[in-house]
Image (cartoon, rainbow, N blue to C red; front, side):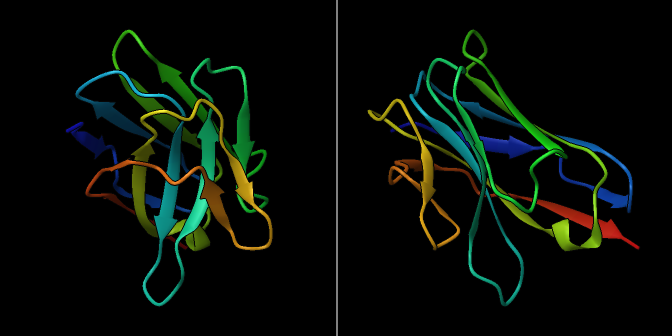
Length: 128
């Protein structure tokens, strides 16, 4: 079983930046970041292919967030700039065991493939 752990969540003022990190216990394929705010459905925020050459961003974060990975460290990152109060949520890291690529599930706000490994989440709070 692969263990996935997120870190880096914090309280930040609107307009500020945060960098989330995720480490896995072994090599994985496509990886993604999701978030969920209270009373709202889970949203696929960003994902990256196993090679790192292909990325996807939801419209709500495009141009502000950057996803990257360091396979030597079994790590995934999410650089978040120009944060807004609407970005407040618990952020989850997920990893795929087999699938190399990821993208959005049309019309749902979710990502595919069905990720196999999930972290416990890290809280991001953006104050206005």
